[in-house]
Structure formats: structure tokens, C-alpha cells
Image 1 (cartoon, helix red, strand yellow):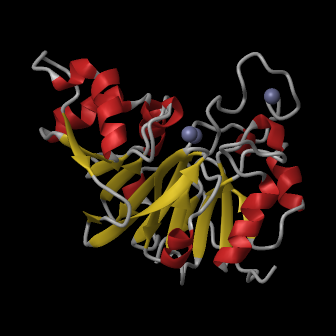
Image 2 (tube, rainbow, N blue to C red):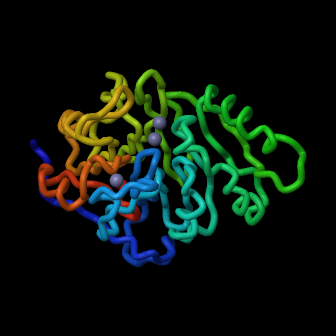
Image 3 (cartoon, rainbow, N blue to C red):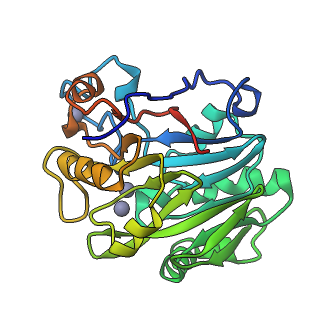
Length: 278
Ligand SMILES: [Zn+2]
Ligand SMILES: [Zn+2]
Ligand SMILES: [Zn+2]
């Protein structure tokens, strides 16, 4: 592989994100790095689920884009409340829902504290298909019932750009089994979760990236998720300087062991890992 060896990371330390000194202005934080069941898995006693390494304790996949004190969330999964408490995000500008699966949407109701505090309808960007799904699944949120989450659903498509704090979040198409879902390019960084295939157009849109976060389920992969080797092949094809893996099953193994077998500039992501985006 042709990756550079430098790998810039920042420890999370559970500090308020806006108070951490000396950070680059544009930062992506991994809020969760597990597949749909989380790690540890309920009632599992495998060595990964019993690991004392904090990197092996993974909330469901989500990411936060930050420009100084402005924050934008990618996916509100079932651990969204805990992720917001842990990262002490004071306000958010909006949310992108990559796709309709439970592990990316189940925390939608927990946007209510931001609705109340910010006194706005929180912008929620998603595909028209996903918007219809959310309106059906969370029908009460789209009524006048007092106290419901106030969501400003904004239907967007592949190739669209979401303005955020003077930057643009470019929406990429990712194939997740039979579903087309959103990936994101933000400056020189891409966040690509629930990937099985990257269409040719997306590979073109990813030209010039320095860093890519890409999902890898475990060593075998499935009809809808890349295996570890498939994810490594995509990172090489993308030609990035740094690769970070996310959306792990406990079957991937312990973080320390997986890292030891990876190319020098590829690392397992973990909850709280922060990456500069420009
Ligand atoms: Zn396990
Ligand atoms: Zn999914
Ligand atoms: Zn997922």
C-alpha cells in the first residue's frame, strides 16, 4: 500500500469539544464506531465483548462535524443521547441521516433538547425515501402534540451540498446492499458508513482526499457490508494518506490485534477519535 506513515489523532478525553485547545478548525469526531448491535453485544461473553480496552467499547455508528463552536451530526442512532452527553455538544446546526436503518435513526426523538434549547425546528437532511420512512415511523413528531421533537425535514439527493458554518458537506452515493445511501465528503475527508460498494461517480468525487473513514463489518463481510479486506482495497483505490475503519462487529476482534495487522496508515476507529478535515 502507498499510504504515508504520519497519522494525526486527537484523544477525546471527554472534554467539551469547543473547549479543547489547539485543534484544527474543521474536525470530524467519531461518536460511535459499532455496527447495529453495538460492542459489547448484549449477553455475549466473547473476548472482544469482555475486553477492558476502552477502544473495544463501541456505540452505534455516528459522527460529528465541528467548525470551531458549530456542530453538525451524521446519524442519530440508538446511542445518540449518550453520545451528546459524552461530547458535551452545546448546540447543533443540523443532522444528516445516511439511511433509514434503526442503528442510524433510533435516536431521532433525542433531538428534543436541542429543539427546546435552540427554539428552532432542527434541520434533518435525508433522501426522499428516508423522509417518508421517518414520517411514517415517527408520525407523532409531525403533529401538533405538545413536546414532540420539532424536525425540519429537508429532502436532498446525491451530489447535493449542505452548507455548514462556511463549509460545504457534499453528499455522495454509497451502495449498502440493495440500498443507495449517503456518504459524505467534507473538504479533504470522507465519511463512508455502511458501505458495500462505491459507485464509479463516487470514486471520482473522492479524488484528492487525504483521509477516509470507511466501514468494515468484520473479516467476512455480508451482502450489505464490506469485509476488512474489501475496505482496505477501497482505501488503497481512494489513494488516501490516512484510512480509518468504523462500523465494527464484535467478530472483527480486539482493536489492538486488528491494528497490529493493518497497513501503517490505516487504523481502527474508536469512539471519540477526532480527525482534522482540512
Ligand atoms: Zn462478543
Ligand atoms: Zn445500514
Ligand atoms: Zn449501520
